Image 1 (cartoon, rainbow, N blue to C red):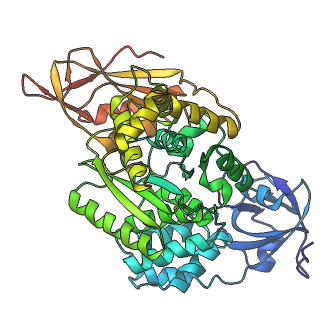
Image 2 (image 1 turned 60 degrees about the vertical axis):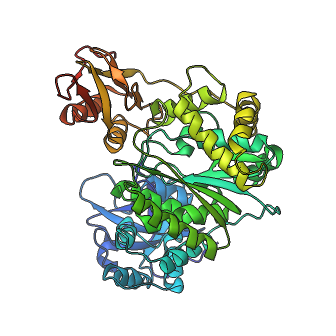
Image 3 (image 1 turned 30 degrees about the horizontal axis):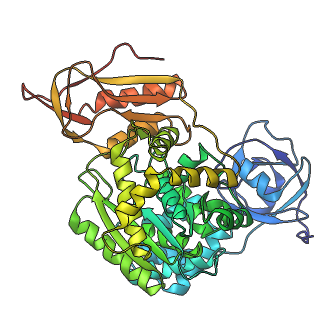
Length: 519
């Protein structure tokens, strides 16, 4: 039981059912005596007490009759954190000042931060002492290459220390990560299945999408349960040698999951925070050997080999300082991988490859085999140069599919991805050759269609670079769960006709929207 503040006015709790994502919000009437007595105003940070726990929340003021006098309203996030019941007693006081905000201000003005300063910031973020606006300031201050390697190391260590850390009691635990920016690049479920089938240990925890239409956790959630507890995750790995879980459910680097929510809203994924995010999760999950996939392409996240080399060097340096072996793999980032972009559509590609379907996307298969082969060699399972052959044998023999099914069953059972009810096709109106594909704009179309929030939303790509197409052939198909989101995506296509460029015999690059969509 928590002691209640003396002389504080008692308020009665009311659940308002307002979704404010991860940020706890409380609501008071403008004429509430608590506002006058405590000097609270809109957007004040307030310490909220119940008889059993307390949190810091942001105050919103209402002027209508949503609340009665003496009531306090709660967003879903605040209500669930406080484990409230209707009309529970609640008290409000001022929180103590958040001292670490001075470090954020220092970073805004270009100063370098120490390990201790990063630790204080991260601890306060995890403890809920930062509002989203404070987190946004921290993310922005650290963006655009504003962290040096020493700061990235310090930030990574602070994020590791903010949550749980797993020791598997083994000399080698492998993992992989793609830095992103390449839609449809969903190799992880295939790679994990191949490597686990070879006898290696790979407890894979993945994030949800930050700025992309799908993350590995989003895609896996269309096929099995990914929100595992730490004990459930350990049991799956003990049983099958691997898992495919959402990292946010096991409190591995919990600050990362909070930062990701705000990064998604800002559409920011800066280099220093990317490295800290990736390696904090890998180290907290007990990995000893990690493959980093860096796609390089004109519309990928990393657009030049020079930038890729710089990012790779930082990964290597941070990994070395924190005692983890890093291997870098540079891959082609010129166009999307597979056929689907969006959780369910990417899941269907993964299943097709694992099941050795003759119509499976071969580019996704080959990328997964290359990564699996590289990791088999890194782990010493095979000699250098023999990894891809070994990985191919495991995949094409059906062993990888069998292992994937076993992992899904251990995580709660396997299910088939659903399909979206609304479709719209972008058609070619002339004969031509595909000369350019814009990864970023294709990802934007998928997000406007509803991905990843709507799991079946996204788009299918029907063409590849260098492919010849003919009039009335589909270039891509948009999938949406509502007609409104379908229209948003179509409007974006109409305003960006160069998303897929065709070099026609007439020297033009024209595409056309099908006037008769399938609904």
